[in-house]
Length: 177
Image (cartoon, rainbow, N blue to C red):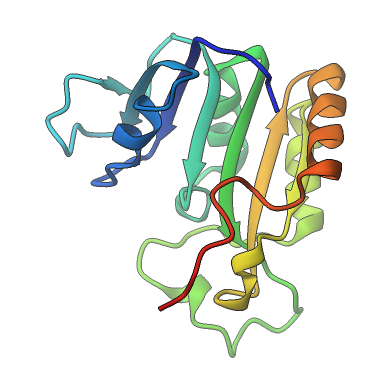
């Protein structure tokens, strides 16, 4: 969607995930670092969450549900983003008012559980734009959503145009074995 080469990318909350290695090998990526509370991988590409650097893309998959202070932590993620960049996140969302029958929000370490509306309010409070996309893999997890945050209207419109003609992310579809 950014239609650029030489991208700088940060994987926020990477933990032990090695996705940054795959991202780094993509031809349009100039650099890809990992940002976390601790350097779990002893990586030379590690930067602390307090980094002052800014990136074209910040990836925060399966991290939002661990935010203790969602406003503060979203602000921190957006601060790492260049003005013309995209913050890509994923999380499950609450589609029902009664969550007592769901296990996901009660798993250890999950402190925040969002509805679509709460995510839009969270973005609006940060003066950010948000697009929520239901991935094709919703067959596996019907509540999974991709979240695309941008800081400028022009990038949001570019992203919207991209998503209109590419509704399935490039990482999908995949075959289930």
